[in-house]
Image (cartoon, rainbow, N blue to C red):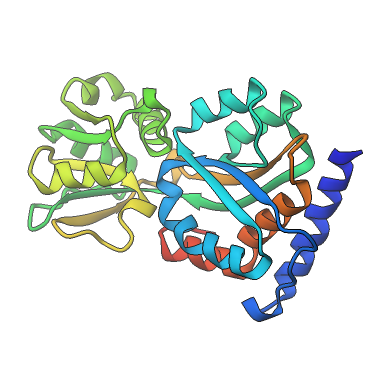
Length: 264
């Protein structure tokens, strides 16, 4: 019953919130609640902007836990109590198949895409086609990206692209695999520790000092990562959680995501 109420709340709130055009028009929930959100680390700038706006509009309080996507997926799969999970659609779908999300409780929010970059002022190799990209990556003395084994979304996506091009082992042999986040890849390239860097759009928006953007990977490589929000089954505060997901899917939420590098 709670799962059905949560799914219904999510559907109704999403429709209603999309129509609203400003924070002054948002209604406040009858009873304030704490909403526990598990989300990927590089979503911090987005939620730092969208979260307080949601809290002011509703009176609810967000308790946000940042981390790597796969460990968080495993925590929820093992029964950890939470209200909302924000992750890649692939991992959110996995939780749904395990029965850990409310029925109908998945909402697609935006896409993360990969950008390649070089040190500011350095030569800009060609990456517009798969053949050109393959040649440029093989010719680069070193390539930096986040560690895919750690569950980094951009790192996994870029590693998958290398495998599709058949050059994963060759690039990995000369790679600077970064244990941190996308901004750590940016810093490594800016310091000259790698010739080409690969990072998510949200870590190069706005453009950091010290790098020049080469551009996105060719579309044929299908490296975009859909980011989705899932309403956790048996969430302690299902109606409030549904309201937060609806807020993220509203124009106000999308504005925060677009400002910080995610794409519709």
